[in-house]
Length: 272
Length: 360
Ligand SMILES: Nc1ncnc2c1ncn2[C@@H]1O[C@H](COP(=O)(O)OP(=O)(O)O)[C@@H](O)[C@H]1O
Ligand SMILES: [Mg+2]
Image (cartoon, rainbow over all chains, first blue to last red; front, top):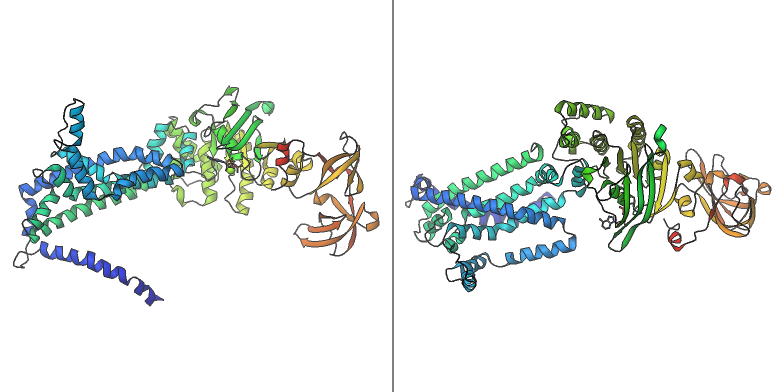
């Protein structure tokens, strides 16, 4: 019995060793050594350079803005979805998920085409004699790309908590005299906090480390920390510095996850 | 008790459909101030819908709800002077018990000392003193139920609506809680509107019972009326166990059941008129064969604690009999029923009534 169970978990063990443990170990190894293989903190310290700090700061700012925009857009959407009846829901969710089946790169490239100086959107605006939209290669385009790509990761956890709130709990709040606004603030929102938290994590973390979106929509001038790390690995072929910076990012990610899970626990009890 | 005759709530021609499911059909119902009124009926008959229309969570397609002389049909729930205890308690799981109970009071802007006093009072009333700081989901079903009641009554509503509040509790707790609800009702002196599908609950607790089926009110009356004088076969069948038989009213005070003539006390049904009769199992006396109106043989015998339950095959029908005296299976017996224990009912006339037959 016990033996069988161990056997069953075998493939999973192999998988996680091959694709999680070994890469992580390699990043740790490269991160703490120099080209000759000698132990060093220099790679980690690279994060302290002005350039890298700027890239990190910008990445933090843009992913924070994107997360907030996602939350503001996703919450009403998830509320509407959770109030639809079952047939309508599957249809709307399908429409919503459909673009997610398209490759992430393709979607971002599509936005590049749409936003370009002589792209689709400006073509239409010109045709209508309206002023051109010039956001390609600006932080705005990056935020747009992040919001577009990561919005579903905010909607789905929100939808999942909202759909589970018993309608009679909402009715009870109304019954006890709460207006619709009070019901939202005192009951619906606090009860949805776990979804808000996981939505924030699921948008913020990938947005913080992306390099594809900033590459395609931000041009070559705007560097986020993801781009810096990518360049170290690819152009500079400097795996040591790249790994060192990645380790620092990992701390940021763990930190943001720790903060959110802590809030999540509090949210169950003392939000009010 | 002076104004017990005042009508507090009036449902006027209320209809409600979901899709093409007609749930309530021109319902008319008057509820008096300070009464304990129970909506009783099988699952799906429209009890909850009636309650939700009164609470303001559903709009009727047609008709009016009058509360205290005012039309409240389109008033939102937060503007109605009544509170609901929901079927599955619906406590706020992200709050403590004290915060749950304080919810309505905070919204209406009561002072902190007033709220604290009220919480204490309400917890005492439902026998849960000291539970202020517990989390809602750490309580048992029965305790959550009491908190739901406490949360509702601190707002001093004129009417408390309770939707199958004992449904999820086990038998012992259910009995205890039903006594507590009666005590609460008397202590608060407000109107209770209670929904249940359990006829025993309805009979023990109510001042007035409204028996519903398929969106129609079948009968309304005191528990005694409903039990002793069911107006149709559905009510008779739903309230307690009974023998329901087709019969012919030969003349006033004489009815022919399964070919045998029984004396009864009902008059005014006409001559040779087909009717239904109800005879409660405890009203049948098993006597010596030659003393009975009809004769039969005992086919089943079960000991039920307080009484024996027997089935007697006579004139092609299995009569259900409850008695404290045992008669062995296979024995020949006579069946005797006192005239006032035979309840005569009109056969259903319209198709609507037909539809509510005894298929429960
Ligand atoms: N929100 C709803 N949507 C569709 N049908 C409903 C809804 N609520 C109730 N019904 C239907 O209305 C009928 C009566 O329901 P309800 O009032 O809950 O009955 P009861 O409380 O007597 O069991 C049932 O057939 C039920 O399926
Ligand atoms: Mg119900």
